[in-house]
Length: 148
Image (cartoon, rainbow, N blue to C red; front, side, top):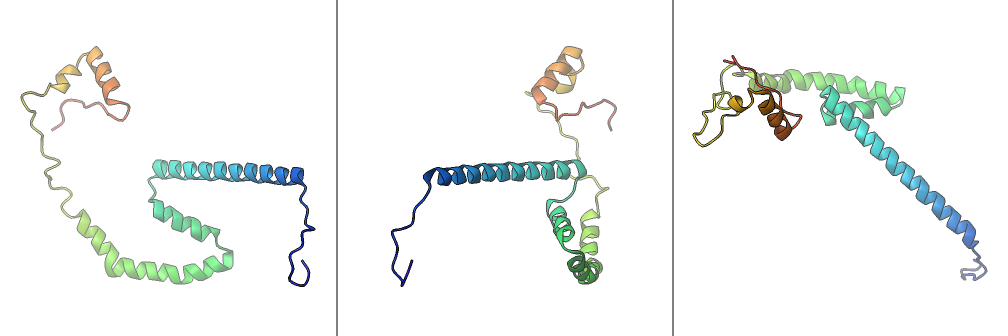
């Protein structure tokens, strides 16, 4: 390009361009796979450890900071966090915990309707227990008698 005029002298090696596009496609696929692996691992950690998703994200952000940035951030973040906890958040948490020892409607025994089958009676035989577990799936814990 000279004097503001477009030049038609530009040439492209089509084979090289095709090679670049293929390389970029492969790299994008690799990045996508890595991002998927990362998301999967994060989910696994959250499930296994019981971490809150946003809390882990904040910790990861802090960990990614340079040592100087992290020191400056924590210099103000820690006192701010403690101030909010003592001013408001700890009391809110205690309010949520009050009355947990008292029975709630969800803790009350559920009466069985007459037309429902007696699952405990069906599950007492070995065959019945196997059928129940196959139907209910792996997420069901067996209920043992004598629970009051």
